Image (cartoon, rainbow, N blue to C red; front, side):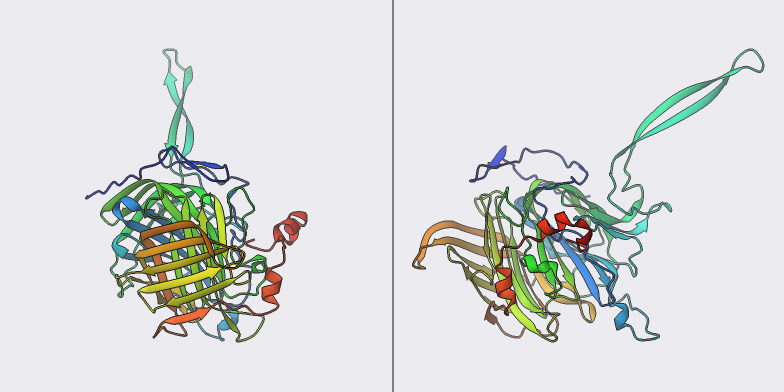
Length: 482
C-alpha cells in the first residue's frame, strides 16, 4: 500500500490577543467522551427532528485540511425523511431518490464516495448535543451502537480451571483474570461512523451509484479534535448563526456553524492511500429543514499563508424560504471571520452584505457594519466535484465543490465617518473550500445581489434576546436540537 504520512508542524501553544491560550502540543489521536459542558458548544448542536409529517432533513458537514499535501476531506451526513404528508395513498418511498441515511465523502484530489441506507433504523443522534452515528453493515451479527461508544474498552474476564488432586473426589479451582482491550466501535461496526465535536471515526464503502464523479472504493478514518472556535469570540457566549429567531420555524432551511475552527489529529485511509496528520485545521457545520435553498454559494477556509490555525473564514448566501409566508423567499448572506480569538460577524440585520458570484469559478463578497468592513475574492480553475444535496424532489446532485480555491481576505476597522481605517487582517490561501448550488433556479449567469431581510424579522433579530437563558429556567420547553 502506498502511504502518505504528512504530519502538521505544531506550535507549543497559540496565544490569543484577549489573553486566552489554546494548547497545541503535538500528540496522538486520543478518544475522550463528550464533556457535559463544552466552552465552544453552539446553539442548535442537537438533532432537530420533532416528528413532523412534512419532508424533513438534517445534514452535517465535517472537514479536515492537511496543508502539507494540499489535500482536504469532507464528510457529509444526511438524515432525510420524505414526509408522510407527501406520500399519496399506495405510493412507495423510493430510496434511490431520497436515501434516508446518506454519507457522502469528498476527499483527496476531489474524488467522491457515497454510501446510503433506505431506512434510519441504525441511525442515532443526540437531541441536544452534536453527536451522531449510523451503521450500514454491522459486524458478525453484533447489535449496532445506538449512542456514542468508547472505541477502546478494557475487558475483564474471569477464567476458572478445574485441577484434580491426587485424592479422588477432591479438586480445586484455579482462578485467572484476563485483562484485554477491545474496540467497542470497530468490533460492532463493519461499515458506518460515529462523530462528536472531539472524535470522529468510521469506515464507508461506495455504493457504485455515481456516474458523474471520480469515485474511490473505501474510506476509513479515526481522528480526535480540539475545538478552537465555535461561533463567537473565545471565552464568550457562542451564537446561533442565523440569530436567535432560528429557534423558531421561520427560515427554510436553517444553518448553524458548530465549529468554525479546530485542530485534528489522526489518520485517513482514502482508497489505497493513507494520510496521517497532527493538528490539522478542521471545521463543522449543519443544516436542517425541508430542503436546501433554491440557489446558494459558500466559502470556507481554515488554512492561510503565514498563519497556523488561528484564522477561520465562513461566508455564504442563498435564496431561502420563509415557511410562515407561503411561497415567499429572501436573498440573505453573511461573512464571519475568527481571528486572534475575536469574532467579526457581518450579517444583514446589522449591516450590508453584497456579492457577485459566477455559476462557477469566481466568488466576490463585501460586507460592512458600523465598525468593520471585509472583502473576499476567491477563484478556482478546477472543475470541482458534483455533490448531492436534499431537495424537495429528493437527494439530487445539484451543487459543485472544490477544495482548491484561491482566496484573498481583507478586514478593516471603519472610522466614524465611514471611511476605511486600520487594516486588521490581510491573508491569502490556495486551499479555500468553495461551492455553488441550486435546484429550482439553475445558474446561467453571475448572481449579483445584496442581502435583504423582511420586516419585522430584521428588527426582531436586532433584539438582545438569549433563548438559552429561558430554556435554562424551563428546560422542559427546550425544543429538539437547540
